[in-house]
Length: 474
Ligand SMILES: [Zn+2]
Image (tube, rainbow, N blue to C red; front, side, top):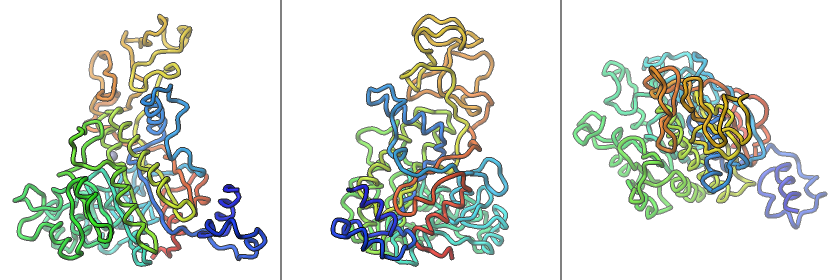
């Protein structure tokens, strides 16, 4: 019966769920078919969460619960709709987070490194940026009466959250002190200043240094008031710096929470005494507040440090971040009305991260490759049962590895590190591991999710959100 109700709700539109039991199919059939509209849209972005990361994280999560792991599913992998997403930027085969997040939030692909401006403007050229702003889903949703929420584990001024609310010629213009004087003189404003002028209801993340003056250890030019102070004066909201203060902040006022000087602490490095909220706690506080707006909301939640861990060749850190990200999605699934809320989960881009060898079922995902019992030398050399496979150089190797990065092997390979703290071996030595260019997945549930199927361009996600929210795109 629930299934019947749900399918009728999807067919006819929103808000019939409550009336389902007392409404006959004939009555429903006479209602004019309306486009599927969502009261709320929640966009979850796992930064750098490519398909290999999702697979490894589901195994890791399952193994943490004492299972073999391969059979496990993360929360969003149970969603009914999926698509593959092409992530390239207009000028790059393998993209960065600024161009990809702009594609998602504006509905238009653009260049690498720019935020909320079109591809006709070159990066770092203020005047060109001012001439080519893109309309953003959050701007349109706010004009339509919806509340806006931004949640991230990175600095609030970092590329992915910035693309929700900002227009900037360069993703690195996070504070005014980050912009060359000549460009600043042309009238471009930094991303932190744009955030405190944006009419958000909830903004939670890190990056205090971008909001305060150099004399206070920040990156802002001295002379003006610190931005959180100014925001409180202008908007009458609550400014908080700890999980406890966030939990105590009133629900009927906007809230700005900045919990760390730069990015928030990796889950793998947090202590029980940490004053920082988890991504799940921030998501919960955001949903509780945004849901009070009668006209609904648009909330973007970023698991931003999956990406940073990969850049360091630290797979265990990336998987810990992904598990927390999946937990935040689960909270949203359990605390929103499925008939009124479109939940999208995706990545902005992938990483050069692979699962290698022929490890046996249930082999520790952060460990050395140990073949199935009784396997012969076909898959890597003669083995004693339960021992790791030896490569041609006489060393074992890990299941997880990278094509490039700071942990590249130089000279003879040593025995690899294993476990959560390990740096996985990689091939090409680079100071920072790079993004990967293959497609990422998009998972969807709720009104409007029927549009999520096939292989799509990344900017189509913006169109899917606009259709669900009934926005015009300008
Ligand atoms: Zn990155």
